[in-house]
Image 1 (spheres, rainbow, N blue to C red):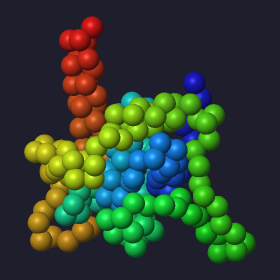
Image 2 (cartoon, rainbow, N blue to C red; image 1 turned 120 degrees about the vertical axis):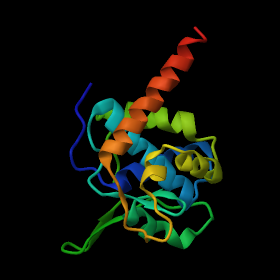
Image 3 (tube, helix red, strand yellow; image 1 turned 180 degrees about the vertical axis):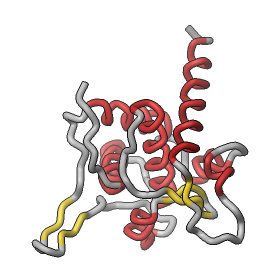
Image 4 (tube, rainbow, N blue to C red; image 1 turned 30 degrees about the horizontal axis):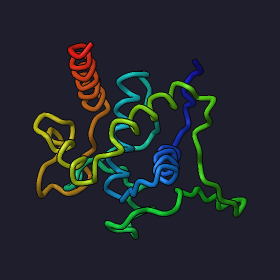
Length: 175
């Protein structure tokens, strides 16, 4: 398998999720997208020991948030997103929709697994999952302290390592 590319953005991950959603006719709202990008980030830290992108994840009232994605998609409010994330290059006056290449097999495997497990959950259910006691969001969020509390990669990695281990142990019970 090939190595993870070092310079993905949250838009790359968002577009992967959105393309899966468009292909399979799953509506994805801003909140659901935020949770799926966060979960993808956590799974990548836990399984590949690499950051999927180099932007902070914040503990906001409704869960983990990547601010650049929030800013790009906030106009959808609670409606399904119907367009991909766009990168604009102000120097060349060009734009593109960032995509993770299928040759980056390790990342694609992780993203496919996350999509397969979590696609059927609605935004509210994913919000509840990220708010559970002991989650990185729960540990970091402080009501009334604003939206700039960053969730540490160490917390995210540790949490997802634990959750993946739990999933694997539960799966072994059925074999």
